[in-house]
Image (tube, rainbow, N blue to C red; front, side, top):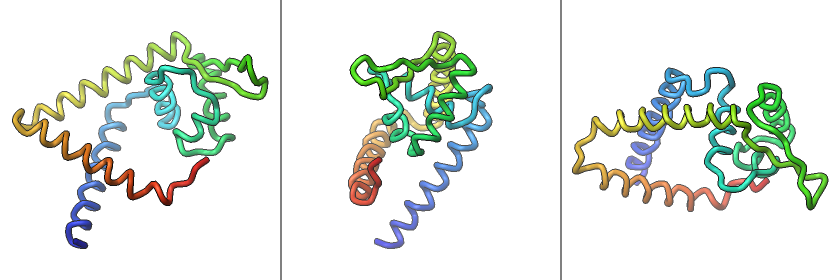
Length: 151
């Protein structure tokens, strides 16, 4: 089992590196850094508005780091902070129309790249690959539940 595990480690490392190279080359976020880009995409995909604690947990960074990131995005006009009506200490972050526009462009680029990547795989194999990846993702999630920090 150890040899098989090592093969998975190598494969996942390769995939991670390819995705990093893809992201750098496609320059999804041309005017913001990678963490800012992740935050914009996260806000874009959420149904409900997110508070600073939720953003901190999603990005796996400290509350103070999220505050600095949001400050930068506010300065660029991509997000705004809205104070909670129930708790004056709580702030929610909302995309502005400019932030929404950039997030849409990012989503479009990601989808186009994914379509291209999938075009290199035989159509008959796509469902099997997807199902296998979901199974693996769920297994990894279960294996890390015990040692991930809650913030």
